[in-house]
Structures are given as structure tokens and as C-alpha cells.
Length: 110
Image 1 (cartoon, rainbow, N blue to C red):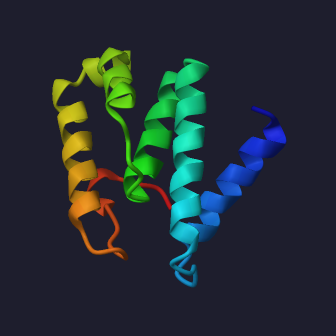
Image 2 (tube, rainbow, N blue to C red):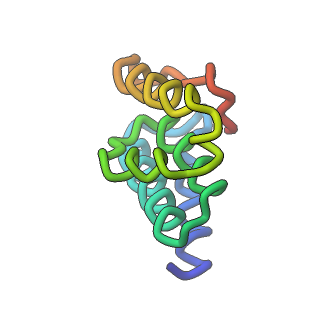
């Protein structure tokens, strides 16, 4: 993935996170978050992948089982056994929450 593509995806995520963002930007932001997450996983950027996971959770993206399995192997997550469980719980809560709600309880960045 080119640097320009990464910048564009990050911009899509930032734009959708603003208060004045329209509802039609959310699906694009979710797709961007998943693309960046998958790229980080593919490149084995473990710490960045965790950050990308937080973005995907915050944006209520549909994170598949394959990605969750990857995080079971990430050392920083394995060293804190409850962390992955909390991330999954936050993800499920975000998916179940109303469309404008933020998943702020796990230290998400804007």
C-alpha cells in the first residue's frame, strides 16, 4: 500500500470522526479503518495494528475472526490476558450502541 493511499485512508477516518461529519461518511471510515488494520497486520506492525484495532472498534467496523485471531498472537496483547477480552467487549458494545455513540472507555484517540 502506498504512502499516499495510507494518508488518504487516515484522512477519511479523521473526517468521519469530526462532529460535523455526515452519516454517509461512516461506512467509508469503517472501510478505511479495516484497510489500515489489515495492512498493519500484513506488515506485522504489531503495535500499530493495536492502534488500528482501536480505530476500527471506535468506528464500529465489522472486525472478522481472522483479525481477532491475529491479536491472540500479538505479544503486547498476550502479556496482558484481559486486554483482548476487554477489546472484544468494547467492540461488541460499540456495535450494539446507537450510531453516534463513542467507545471512549478503552482510551480511544480521536
